[in-house]
Image (spheres, rainbow, N blue to C red):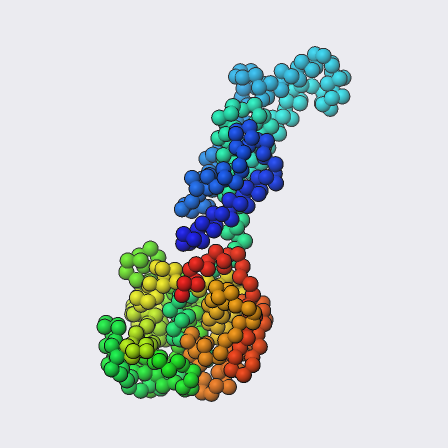
Length: 477
């Protein structure tokens, strides 16, 4: 969470916690400890205890050490003082004294009429049970202790602070629970058309013409790469070439498997496996079985073969983009893929991928597209999964630009994120439209769409609160 979204999150937690306290009418208790401005006090406590911390960890520790243990300690102390007839004449001891005095005045019958019990001791046992139940009821805050008003001002101040910290923690937890899981893709994988619209396509290649421009990525020898011949020339921007390693080509029979939406899915899944060492070495290490089961949902030998092929493809494809001056920039997803014991893939075969500099920068700088909602899971295995992230980028840009709905997009604008790799325009647009319908049917990202000539008109859903929190990340692409 960056600083902007962190501030927004704090403001939301603070305002909802303050609202909860006011709705439960604790103004009298707060006034007794000289707290007049509830929201200011809640904000102060959030900054002191929760800000820049793991909220759940802070809440868990406070709940056990400052909340539960204190409630039990208060009750044990009150019962012990009563049973041993010592300590201040208040709480249970004070009640016992008051009941004895009432008994002496009203007698047994008067006492029974007033309290519906036969003796002072029976009534005291009811009070003890009430306190013991209160101590174990985590929904009852400390200030609801029946004798809270008899505590010292210092005790009331300390415990009211603990109560408010509990409310803050509960609100933060509920907000987190209400916010759907984020499914993310890096900027590079969305704004550079690595992946084709159609699956199971085979490519032919030709020698790549570098031209006279300067190559910005001096670490790459373009003589080691060939250019993919587009099946439909307008399906990729004119200034862009898709490259594939000659080392990869040497292992094939002239037909090169293209990158598709399932490869995009695998790429996103692999990025979710990174750990703390990633920041220092750009490497992600994982057993191949983990990816196989996630992508294919089974453990068959064929799935291991297909997954291995996808890993290799992700390592061998590059995209070259030429600017107006003719200079080339080369983009990749993985700079290397190492498969331990590649000649005999086993379930525990370890995969080591090193992400490209572009992807590494995206992740460090949080240049990502986030989709919230489980609908995206239902689109896995289809082009609609990839298309959803492209549409989400357009939806966020549309919000930033304050576009009137519907947002208007020429079909060729999509080719900057997706390669239209079928042979004819009509085939590509039919595939696009089929998958727009898939997304629309799940009622997320887009409410509706229609086409007029070469233009698509998109009716985007309004942004949800959690997407507004994220917009500082995703809109800086």
